[in-house]
Image (cartoon, rainbow, N blue to C red; front, side):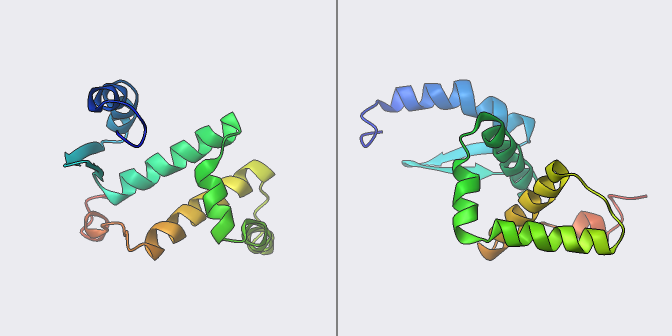
Length: 130
């Protein structure tokens, strides 16, 4: 709060008004410990949130997270490789779908490189599919 020159109450109010409603749509919560906030919930839900935020950023032309990903990964090469793989397997996709698939792959790669993995126990135990 001090770095932003605002009070703790202002930050709490903004989080409660703007952040928590978005997080609740993804079944995520913020946990505060001291001055540190932590996102709590399933990894799959966190990835869904990231995808949602990127789509919003791209729609709003302020793509901070996507820009950070493109600094680390060669998105054009990824999209070209994806397009080749899809064409080779007779899948015709438009540029929007190609960008969406690339975005999801970037999220997956980025999260896994930072040691965040999906809990697949539900899928493996048959709970996801009867």
